[in-house]
Image 1: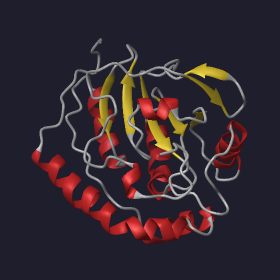
Image 2: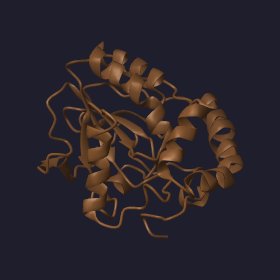
Image 3: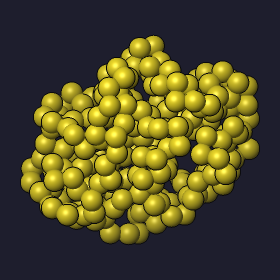
Amino acid sequence: MAYNYDNFEASHYDLATFRGPKPGTPAPDFELQTTEGRAVRLLDFDGAFLVLEMGSLTCPLFQGRRKSMTSLDAEFPDVSFAVLYVREAHPGAQIGAHQSAEDKAACAHRLVQTEGEGRRVLIDDLSGTAHEGYGGYPNSVFVINRSGCVVWASDWNDPAATGRALRLLKAGKPANVRSLFKPVPPHISLRTLGNGGRGSGADFLRSFPNLIWNNLIRRNLRVAMGRPAAVAPDITC
């Protein structure tokens, strides 16, 4: 399967096993581009922690979390926040699969300039090297400490859980927080998929039963029955 798929299918993702770095393990570092065209290292950040979220224009989950994540950014001025711009989750006729690095950069620019994203946006390469290094999911989130260790993570971002994790970490406590998968309101999904253009919504609807079973039911049961990792905020790895 090509990384930048033209048509979304649930089978593009291993929804049973998340391959991203787990709490207590090193956070992978990569050279990325900013929307201003500068080369930077992912782990070169100024805050006490880095909150790294995966996102794209055509991901309804990412679009539906942005307002809440902006509020967390304001609540924690001494924490760095960044979006890793990855492949289009639901490409369509208007916002298609990236064909070049320039295509991907243009989408990231649109996220900032047209849609008003205020967090730092870092652009992955065309092959999704950094995205794959962080598990390849469309809207996962990681909290990384100054030593370059993952101290909390969720394969699907729930801003309320991310906020609870940050408050614990800032208090010097392990972030033993469960993060359940929560859908976004239908109007956000419709708007996001509509912006993607023809094909974006149809592909999503074909996979909808699979997504509900694997994320809302199977995954949430696994999380609810499991024990969240409890990693010290100042761990070295």
